[in-house]
Structure formats: C-alpha cells, structure tokens
Image 1: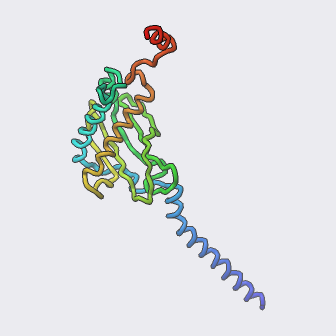
Image 2 (image 1 turned 120 degrees about the vertical axis):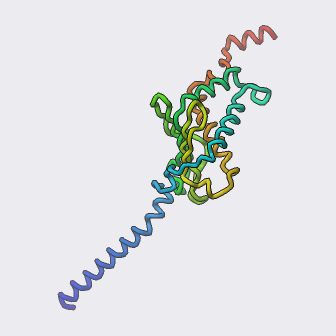
Image 3 (image 1 turned 60 degrees about the vertical axis):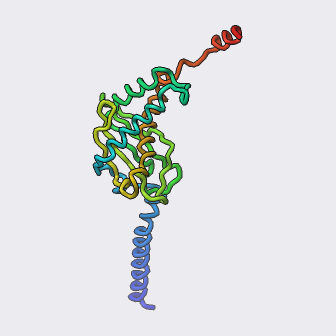
Length: 208
C-alpha cells in the first residue's frame, strides 16, 4: 500500500470515528436527561390557570381544619389553627419543583417547595415526600401567589390539563400542607403544647 492510500485509509478511519462519536453524543442526550436530570419546558411554571384559584382556597380551608384542635386532632394546641392562618398570611409565593427535573428518572427525585415571604425572605428545598419520575410522565408543578392567606394567582407547567380537575386535589392539599409543615418544623410551639419535662412526669406520679 503506497503512502497516499495509507493516508486515505487513516483519514477515513478518523472521519468514521468522529461521526460515531457525534451519533453517540446525540443518542446520549435523552439518556443523560432521563437519569441525571436537566431543566426542560415542563419545569417552567408560566401558564396561568385561574380555575385553580377557588380549588386551592378550598384546600387551604381543608388543611387549616386539619391543623385545628378537635376530637380528630387532639394533639394540637388551641392556638394551632390561628398560628397556621398567621403563617399563611406571611407567605407571598409557594413554588413546587422537582429536584432533578420532572423528566428525570433518577432515584430520590422528590418534589420540593420554594417559599417566598412578604418580607423578602426565601426558604428553599422544603421536603414534601412526594416522588417524581419521568417514567410516569412530567408531574404537575405550580407557582402559587397568596395574599392575606388566600390564593391570588396560580401558574403551572400545564400538566393539570392532562386529566380531570379532581385529579389535582391532592396536589393542591400537599402544597399547602407541606408549606405549613415547614413552619411547624421551625416553630413547633405554635402548634403543640409545651413538651412535658421530668418534673411534670414526677408530679403526675405523685398525683396518681
């Protein structure tokens, strides 16, 4: 084989490798997005849905009832509901998002909340316990604006339109419940009576 043929063969091999790498790179993009997560159009909460407003207000009331001391919830303090109402009145926006993106199939891809308060303070990465998986299709994401504890506007990623309005009721409840749950985690005394001390236990035994 002469020098010219050797060079042509080498050039052909290199060109073939380059084409192969390009094809593999293109094919790897959806796999990377699936397993490691990346931002997609379904992670954007830009679609306003005014019909969710009364639905969310109904769930706010339902959550508040569940934070009210009663025979069903005897562990809460008498001030629990009022404190939950006060907390919501300080919230400007609650935004849900998926840890790795709604199209990711990576493990531990939980739904998280970002809460913005009227004073400008923001808390992020609020755990909800809800798992998101691209295997099931993009999950519903919402950005909810509140005013005086009531819904002012709602923006979503549009996924609610893929089913019946009744299908998102639990999502609405979860959003508010986990937001108040954040306050409970940092201000437990606003929701429960003071924890009993060893002296309290000793007195109970003395009075037995």
